[in-house]
View 1 (cartoon, rainbow over the protein chains, first blue to last red):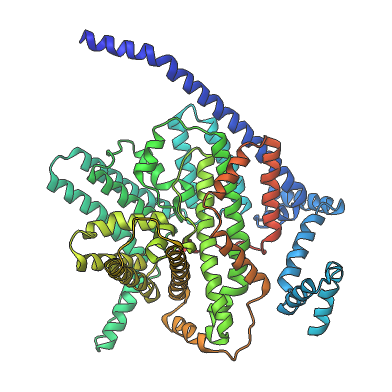
View 2 (tube, one colour):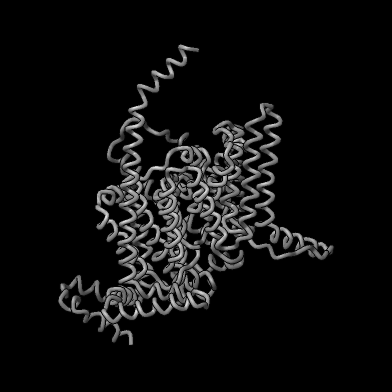
Length: 139
Length: 483
């Protein structure tokens, strides 16, 4: 019994420090990672608040009617209007317009682009003239 | 609560902050995570949280009793009863309506019409996933793969942990419960993996899957007779990509969210459309379900231990039941049957080929290399198209609709309406990513983990912003929520 106790004690004295150091290191690493990701999430939330404020309005419009909810809706709408006034919604609209153009692209336009690329007509291609020509041809 | 919504963003922010603040008190952290998971589940319909709790208690008690009993016959009886309770609950919610409708048709057909007790049964979201997890827990305890868990809280967290609760991946107790016994850790690797998986998952779901669903797949499958061969062909390719992006997108987000909370889930998809055989496909598609079916259905049925005929029967039955698991409809039955039958045929052919031309152990010449390369490419093309054919049954609203869809491949008269360059481009880009190096995501995560927090925040914020800007309006539910 005493041997067993001694073994246990010596095992603890040898491993205690090492285990404790590893645990401390791991705990410190976890603490740093939590702060790091909390900061990252805060930055991400701020970015979205400034550049995607319309989404906030869509979200709060789903709230039920009530004094608190109405205030939140009013605040969000005002915030969104301010962002739009300062043109912070422009990048969002630019991307959406670009996607809309992509979605509306027809096979004829793709064909015209491919032809232009093959015939070295890159100047007209870059100016978007082929896009208009293909549209005219379709209409 | 859907992952790609602001509600989930707020929910996750709270869960992340509070759960890590409680990391020094494991019991409180677990209680908080269980409460958060039940809240997440109750967001759809709070009444079903009671069902989740009931099945958890049944599995917990089953595991505990199996662990306490030494008698093999008693252990067998307990595992049988516990699994039966799980299956009865699943069967009632999932197949009650289908069973009564089929019985009604049968009785009417033979002139014995009766008024059957029809009722509207709402399918609890994610029931199949948490039932499978419960079954795997008691069977693993019975098999001695894991010890019976003494803490009800741990079993509750294992079954209800919100990232995987409603659409998988199906987490095994042997993988997850030991993590609950350790001090939770969050490392730079967790942050890198979590960020990359959440962003790629959202991109797959919100942009690719949603555009393909609304602008191609839904209209083409709604009335296949109104579309020509080209639209139907692109439509089924589109569905193959849509379901992959939808489901693997969900899995990616779930794995990423779990990583940010300090838990590790196994991979659920591994570039499935690069598979060169159906067997290979099932090693890459919904890996947590296919391994579950292998371990808890195929092997208990006898696996490949009872001779050739029994192996084919077991393969067929496993896939057939896998099909039925997806839903109570003949289309799913055919989907499972097709896969089961083709797996058996593949096995026969492989055996025959091995006998005719045994595999060479020595490195072959140029001709052998070219031959192997060509057969691999042919295998990929064949497997993809077979999987697409089966997807038609999986997606179609009815058997008649699926047959109309296939018949439509002969219609070269109806002009193309839906296959636009944008949608074909989305399909092509996704297919290209099936053939990129396997560890591309891991390399990205390696890069992300080095970023200082302001850059990580910029990446996360601009990534989310861009996905929102690219995605169509509205959020469609994930396909696998219905299973």
